[in-house]
Image (cartoon, rainbow, N blue to C red):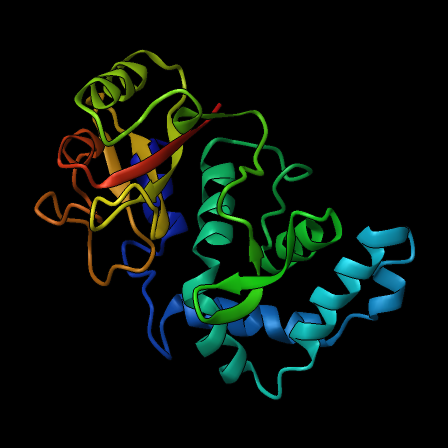
Length: 233
């Protein structure tokens, strides 16, 4: 199946959007229900030391929410790193052993691996990834060697996109251009060789005029709207 079709299938034909009744909210609510049914001590039995304490703290924090609605409202906007990593891994054809096709189970596995923990996202307290570290290895993190705020850095990033064998990337958007990312999305290389941005928060179908949801990644780089690109190889 062409990657464009797989993107649309994964994102429910462009309708994976935020909102109290949107698919993201429903996914997060289902995740909450899944976590209510697990036995924390059983799940963390194979861990030890700090790793066990961190996982217990994260799982208990989720279980202590009083409702799925509360969990979704507090958490969905801060889960962009987890959601986009899960999407990118699936689109890059990582095996189910590497990237569980069930989002709730993937989320739990990442907590137990120590990749996801209770943390702060601005003023929000939640259970999500640290944004400074990639979790889908092998991943090539372009910001390790490229400054996206400079003309030379932008040119290097575009050259990397034009020559890489990767077809999928996790993108850290930089809305105000302050070299500090605000939101994680995915991008994919289509049949025409263009890298297209797909934001799971955007409502409606993908549109080339919407830079976050159907627009070309190279245009966003040139406009200074990208903080990082993580090629999922």
